[in-house]
Image (tube, rainbow, N blue to C red; front, side, top):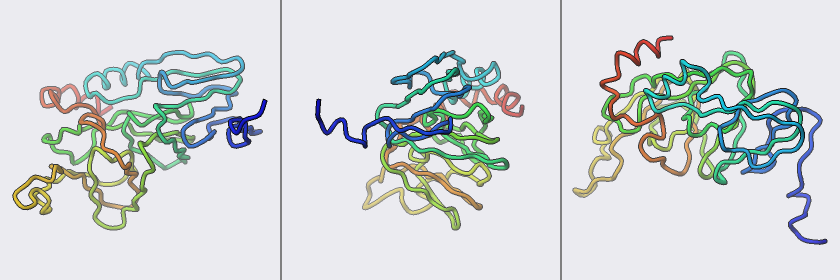
Length: 244
C-alpha cells in the first residue's frame, strides 16, 4: 500500500530516552517508563502496558482551590511502560523545561501534561484588580521537569525588558517572578477611538526580568484564571487557602 500519508514525516518518532517530546506540532508523545500527569481526556492513542488514574485537581487542597477560583487542571496520572499520545483540539503544543529555581505561572486551561517531578499550586495573580473579568488565579509550576503547554496558533514570546502590556485573555504563561498588574485601557489612551470603544477594556502589565507567552487568540472570560463573579464573597476563604 502506498500513500503520502505513510511518509517519514507522519511515522512515529522513536527515542532512546523516556519522557515528553513532540511527535509533531499538534501531538505530544510520552515515552513512558514510570509516570507523568496529563489533562483528563487528552489521550488519543497508546501502546504498551499503561494505566490511567483520575486525580481531580491533584489533592484535596488543590480541589478546594479549583472549586473556589475556577482555576486548576483536571488531572490523570499515567503510569506503566509504553507510548502515550496526547492532543487537545488540534492546538499547537510547546514543551518547556523547568529547572531548579524556575517558576512558571500558567493558565490552567493551557496545561496539557507534565512530569510528576514538578510541583504545582493555584496562586493569586498579584496586582490584579477585582474589575477584570479575566480572573485572579493561575497555576504555578516549579521544581525540575518538563511541561507541555498548548496555544491557539503560533505564539510570540515577549522578553520583558521594558514595560509590557498584554490582553489578559491572550496571555498564556509568564515567568512567575514578574510583577503583574491590570490597567484600564483608558489610562493608556486606548479606551476610545473616534468616540468608539476599541473593545480592549483592560490590559495586563508585566515588569521585571522574564518572559510572557502570548497566543494569537483570545480566550473567553474565565480562561486566564476562572470567572471573577463571586470572588469578592470568597475572599476570606481564598485568603486562607492561598496562603498555604
